[in-house]
Length: 384
Figure 1 (cartoon, rainbow, N blue to C red):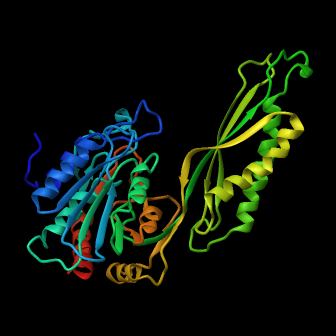
Figure 2: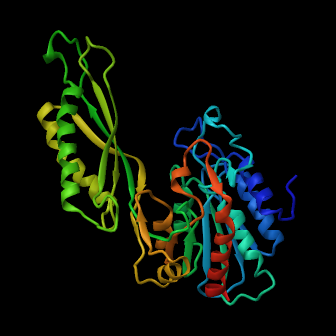
Figure 3: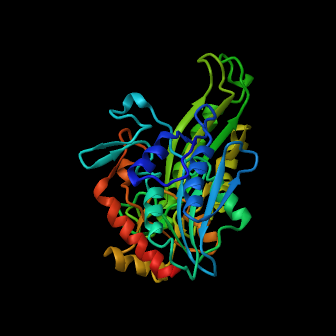
């Protein structure tokens, strides 16, 4: 039975961590997040928030949460995702599904990325529960950020929530992030014709064709690096990684099928569909040369790159409050989707990206109160 009172911050984080909510493209590992959503909804409703649980279409057990305090135009969204990556508990020295307080650190799956942000956001909001808000405070919790971004995409389709500013509590070491790269994962599939290896004329070798495809992809990699630059990023150009390749089944058979899977990290201003089309156009001549068929298929649709202007109100406010200039990261977040909803969006959270997706993930305790203080200043600034 879920308690209808809001427990202490440590106890609430322990409850969130204990509810496994892995999202994964592999259905064998994928799990629902509804228990986490329901727990957050219960706490927030008890504190006076208007709570909406929004199930994802055709995804049983998956849902988003919009919890609103106050009303009016504008307002502030404090956003996070409720899912985690898969884990192997044999690699952990601590129980991944329980909060362990040791040496100034809170260990547990999702403490840094990013269940730990929710109790902090709620603790910040509690200061203003009895204060009339001129503009709404919204706590947003999403599904499937670690896999398909289907939660954030569903919000864009719904056109909710609507606010003026949004802070996503991903792990950034409390430094504001206004830019990040996008992400594409593509499968290049070569379909040939198998046959007996003693006579090459009996088939069309997909692996031979893939050799030429690799050459075109590497040329495309160089073209991207030379043609697109953004000095705000540590790695200033879009990257293309050859991730894995699979083809054939036996040495004495002509290879009839071969797949190459790649990862592309575009910078702001690059269109995902145009990138995909450009890549496809480069490699189709290889298909004609080898008399095979070649397709470029997204493993998922992709995440656009994100950029909030350096002169935006939220960026300038967070730079002043943190003492850090807003920067960039190479990983992707839900920021572009919140931006599509019309919000100035900055990524800032108490965790560190070095802890994300790692065994013995932890959140440093000394980050908690400064993050609460920072969020309270933002609530005062944008909601009162």
